[in-house]
Image (cartoon, rainbow, N blue to C red):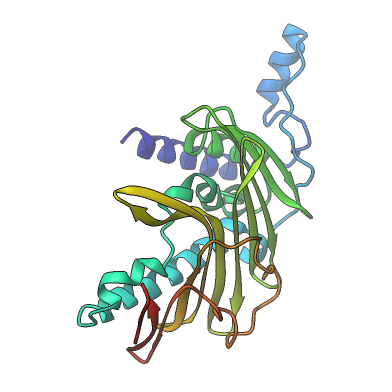
Length: 283
């Protein structure tokens, strides 16, 4: 409830700024004349918000939060279809999670994507103060934000365990393609990419996750999940114990015929019919 109230207050602030014409100067300047007046009276300098661009946006072409959420909705619809169609399939109904990525353990890195560009969406241009407020209330109160129109976002903060978290996100609006890198205590913890294809998407997630259990003890391995779909037809796969980061698909749609080739676990659904290999069961 507290978080919901925070979201409502942030959105009210956004619309209030829009109604007043908003602040169009974002490079280290205060968002209002009131703040400037207080600074002059006290003789103290305003704390700058780090930003390197404030380009105008006429549509959603370059706005991460709009296009990322479109991808998430399409992926969720595909996964829901797989689940629905698998009820009568003895293998897929039990083992589909081996090939379909769960974002629960990597949510802390992906969550900021839902708010990147929210000021552009609401105000028509980047507003550093609004963006910072969004991230402070919805991701971490100690967050530092750097935005560059050419290189994207860089966020730094601290998680609930006290670890240093960093998220870097680049977006290619022409290709509707995104690349995110997540770091924990300076070590790479996640690579996530998606790119739009004709009628659908291709995406991949690269991170360490549990791949098996030994007498109740979870065994982790570095894995790459891949999914490629068009509507309700598509494939999902997991490559276990990989040695390196996968070939990038940022701004470059992969070959659908080879994208999941060699996967440890995979499933394909075509017009409601399944084929694949899950937990060593071929079907």
